[in-house]
Length: 384
View 1: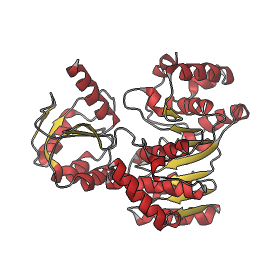
View 2 (view 1 turned 45 degrees about the vertical axis):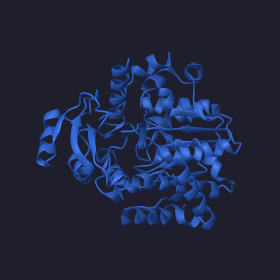
View 3 (view 1 turned 60 degrees about the vertical axis):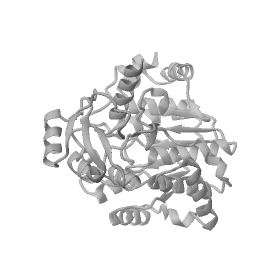
View 4 (view 1 turned 180 degrees about the vertical axis):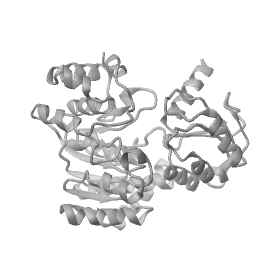
């Protein structure tokens, strides 16, 4: 029922009506009983930071939801509730109820992400906490309409310039304008992000604090223990630190075991001893992967969207690439194969089209959620 309704909505838009979600939500917000919301904005690391925090809150006895996007294989991955993805039964029931609250005109007009955001928040009513991850940007994102207890700001870099701005400062301002009360700022690569945070703190009288202010010596020791237990890459450790800072801000005591079972699939995840998958798709993600895997060589299973700087991404990853195998992705945003092949050739990297895995070689599957989805589906078909 829900899936049929969503299938009629496009996943991506050339232009976005930023007034639509606030306008629709204003009509129905009295019907919602919203929990305490921790909002996540930034370019990279929102999903893992959110899952670390949501898992800890749930393990500490709080009823908790985590709304994340996009999904890899099943839509249910987007709506995590008290330790697991929601069932089709819960989704379809919420969908039926939400359609009774919305006018048919508003239900039809909402974008895929706008509608699913409302759907998740309908499911999350009466919880203690919701970790709510922005989809694109911050200020005009569908998730921005709700009242937030705290905003967590993950690393910000160049991405989605068509919607967010052409410079790091412009992108940071667009994202940081979503802050309502207080925010914690993760370690940033660009000084311009700190400048933007200072500007907004002054102009809007909101408190934006660096993550280091909420991390003490005892926290650092616990973070190292958790990192060791979960075998976290360096950039995932930084995301864990941001999640811990949120617990400290909320004055919630935690232990090392509070984060067990908090790994989010698709973030440097081993699916076999010789295969790593990662849903990253931008320059910042490539740099993080290089730092985490430097020293080894991998066959890169790859593809890219047109709007990504894939030449720079591949140039960053080049030290750990032995060759590239291009996998087909079913997405209208995918770059033309011949243009991608031309860039790979210019970089002097051996390439071919992906066919199957050689168990004696090491692979990194990277490029987007679509790349990982296509790879996993092919692997499943090959193994049947």
